[in-house]
Amino acid sequence: MLHNIAFGKVTIRRTPYTPTLLLPLVTAAEEGNPLEPALNAVVKQLGFETFMFAMSVNPRGHHESQSYVYTTLPADWVIRYDQMAYIEIDPRVLKTWNSALPMVWDYDSERGKDQKTDDFLDDAAKHGVASGVAFALHDPRYERVLVALNSSRSRMDKVRRASITSQLGEMLLLGTFFHELFMKGIIERGLAPVTRGAALSHRQRECLQLASHGLSTEDIAYKLGITVRTTQFHFDSIRSKLAAANRQEAVAKGIAEGIISRRSQMNL
Image (tube, rainbow, N blue to C red):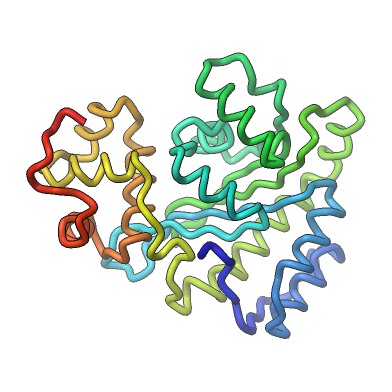
């Protein structure tokens, strides 16, 4: 569970602006080799330790969106992030949602806003995510893409920030090239998300239970005190885990598998 999907052989067009740094990654994809060794080497050369790529995508055109993730982060952190519903408070998600600009952050820059965010930052730091760069990619074919490079170093000094600034172009190209590889290697081949079959988090069960009572996305967001877009993220994950084409099918599967019950009360 949660091992990255093997791409197989994937070829993308090499352009005149393809950085030398990324050639080993492109070559590994062309030869059908595992991408992690080449990806780890690129991330390390950029001054980071781990990589995360996540997206919401409508895989068939007539289905509702599902969530896909590819990461070199430890599996225990990926599972904990999901189960704790950290997507609701992760500053990287919140700050890149309405901006195409990269976010350069560290423990200090995000701390002190509220207790939930501070708790997230403390927990993330324990799992090697204490600073980094995050940015969104906007692809007209798909809904949402987030790329993050992470470091266990909790604070960035001026020298570190200057180094990151000088390499931002290569980081953005890494995200763009990996996105293209992911589209061809995973999405266009119709492969399932790695979370398929994983347990729903408490928050996801709450969303699904409320949906079974006929509440809309807006109603669910209001009742749970979260944003509409975060509620949509939760349903992307629900459909991914349950292999459901839409919300109605997810509710039906949730009831059939005993995850939720029609008889449950609304005061969750």
